[in-house]
Image (cartoon, rainbow, N blue to C red; front, side):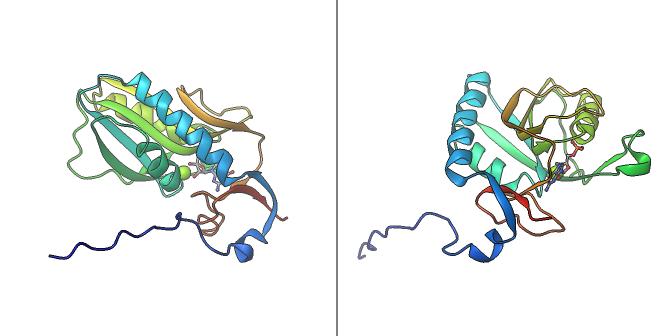
Length: 194
Ligand code: 5GP
Ligand code: MG
């Protein structure tokens, strides 16, 4: 059998993002800054869980998709990955903090060591509700990581163990985060034009 030629793959980046980028008012974090920080975070997480037999990662989709994909590939530990969707109902129900999860059927978290990952901590409702639910499921421990944390009053106190960047209280898009379903594919994180 003939060996296949070794190919050099281009980095996974869009060749031309001019169209999507042109909707940005400014770039907050460029791709290189995100990459460097996520790599450092992976080391922090790996150190924290050193010697762990099996880690259960719970990743909130879809916003966390790119962050989680990059972070986990930097962690050389046995783990399993669980993804779920979360939607919080702000406005009139904000005080009640109602958050709905697309909880996977037959997910057994009893006595598991859980790493909870989300794109951004805003009001804190989503992560607080999920932490409550995980405790009710009987997990052994919970550590929580977010790529971004907004500097603002948090509606609920929530413990976060790993934070990528603290940002001002502005609406951001890119690197997984959307506005009306768009802009997730931006390699950077930015603020949209008004
Ligand atoms: P929280 O429950 O902390 O208020 O909301 C967290 C969720 O709201 C995040 O997982 C994210 O989906 C969404 N979110 C909060 N702030 C932003 C933002 O600035 N940009 C985007 N695209 N989503 C946000
Ligand atoms: Mg989200």
